[in-house]
Amino acid sequence: MPTTLLGPLAVNNRFQKQGVGKLLLVDALKRSYKISKSIASFAVVVDPIDEDAERFYAKYGFIKLPDSGKMFLTMNTIKTLFE
Image (cartoon, rainbow, N blue to C red; front, side, top):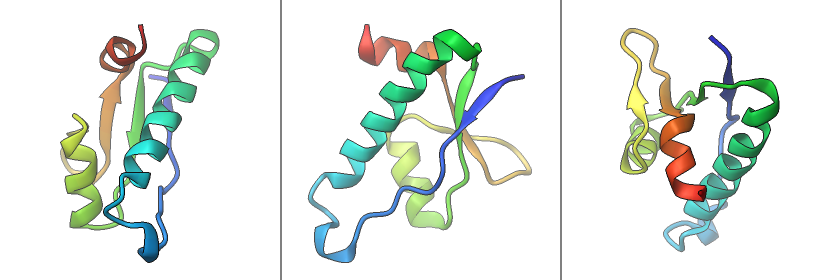
């Protein structure tokens, strides 16, 4: 099943807790959604580096995949954000 894999999103310590991570994620999801129309991607997948990152993605609706540590968000869910 075709998916879009996001690389790690990192924010410098000086800018954490200021909403920069959310802005990076929204931008990445918007770009992923736009390109999904051309490449037929079903979902966006992330591989959280630690529990803090996992909580960050879960806050935005990502679902943990069993036995892999990865998380995903379907394009149908992302679609509701941008249409």
